[in-house]
Image (cartoon, rainbow, N blue to C red):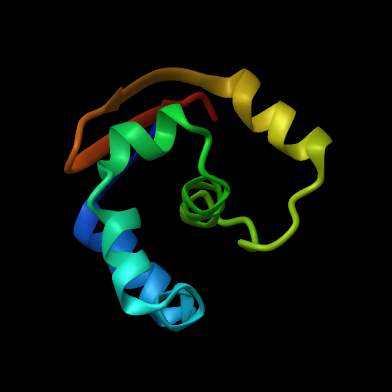
Length: 91
């Protein structure tokens, strides 16, 4: 079993490294981040999903739907709150 954990700060840093703060504009970026991880997860944020897949070792851009499905099948537990998430995935 593999566990992936991250904080809102980790996710924000990852987005900034990729220039999303500049693409969105700083005000919109702050609004987006202030939604928190649970809200972004529940709303199926494509950026958050890209981050999660990147943490699993996949390239962050344009993951095939079949690969996403296979990854999703292996998820055993998800814990998410405003500041942190933890996902357990079967190897």
